Length: 301
Image (cartoon, rainbow, N blue to C red):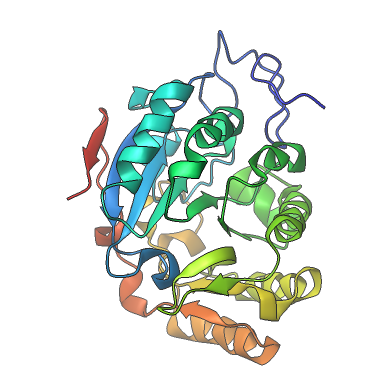
């Protein structure tokens, strides 16, 4: 199947919009827009290290979670447009700045262009390429990334279709995420690390514990343990939800996760045998969210 912007079928939304002349569900046209490029020190240690991750924040998003901490850019098409050639040059600039990884944040809706740009420069990159996404992907699109991405950093957000429909307008989220995670594992296999504990290749699955939804989080972890070999992946169990970016009236989302909620899910993760990364309650703060503006910015200092 041809993956195309013309009659867009890049993600599971399958909106079929001609993104060469209009915007899709992702609020984006055909040319990737990037809001911010920076050295980010708060990603998982195995991709961040002491030098930070070289984050490239793409605008727009195909999921649209109501609590998104990057809503300033995910719900609008902000920043600078890059064609394939310009994007490849930007990737080299980031890689040559001394960061530990090239961290592509929410790139799903631009997969064909990102894949083409990576193809141009992959043989020149000496750091891992990280695909940092919501997990709501099409496997045909992911196939374009074979041999180009070293580390997948997907979310596995929900187990319940009702919850994913309510918070992300995607009742099919779990099914599509399961397909994507399995496909990612088939491409990369077991995680590999260097002598300093930095990941060279593999999968880190993120799960954000939401307030009032600890049973759904536990169901997510149990399902994840069924679809992927636990020993071959890493889990990033996040407690950083903050209501600062939520503007609705869902009572659960108007508060932070309690210690009991997070510890309940953490205990289940350990019982299941997951290895990886846990967060402290202090991470539930907007101060860890990058500052975005209406214009493109780059700061790799």
